[in-house]
Amino acid sequence: MAIRICNVTDIKPGRALRVKIGDHAFAIVHSPDGSFHALDDKCSHGEISLSEGFVDNETIECWAHGAKFSLETGSPLSLPAYEPVNVYEVLVENGEVFLEYEAE
Ligand code: FES
Image 1: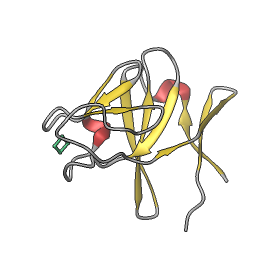
Image 2: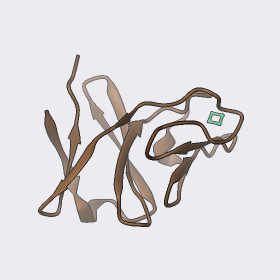
Image 3: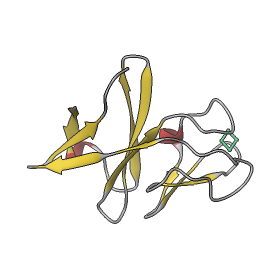
Image 4: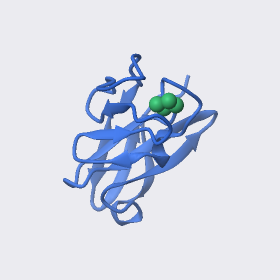
């Protein structure tokens, strides 16, 4: 199910927005290259919101200890994280951002 999140202009390039759907928190990321991504909003190394981290074209970096995760796959690309985070499909249509998510 595609859930409308916001307008494209609501998240500046290089920033992320924390969104909760039920009990599930997502980091909706607007990469500097213009693409949008969605990940679980929790670093796999600790209780830190990835949406508060640093975004570049392909990664988001946790501010706490510097672990970087792939925006495409959620894979950890640097220590101290070694577990991936889940990623979700994001659709952009007519200037609006949608998250593909099926609540359990
Ligand atoms: S809590 Fe994210 S790198 Fe440690």
